Image (cartoon, rainbow, N blue to C red):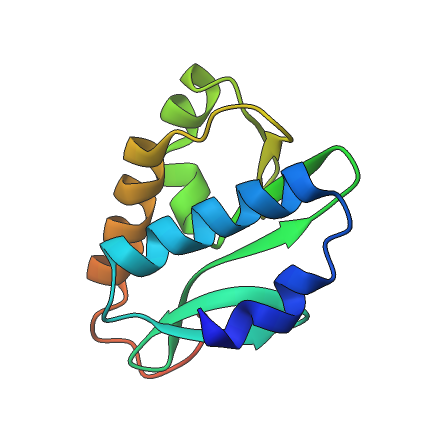
Length: 123
């Protein structure tokens, strides 16, 4: 989590900071093999140099960003979780519960789907 320290320190609202730390820590604990980095001003997780998921902060929500394929694959579960989503990210309203089962399924999908990738992004 050292790579995310400065990013986290810039989150002004303590409850938002706490929620972001919770999610980042959960990913770190669940997937210790993933590398941590700040990319495009977002905390990101990579596997063998390929993008797996990132998180970004907005006024009314934070976003989980798994690339469009991860969103498309789990769109029904995203809707059932009560989240809004776009082609690029899943919106989690501040203070609302995080569906860690869904998050795990998306991360597992990306790790498996991109296991042979040599590039950062899908092509």
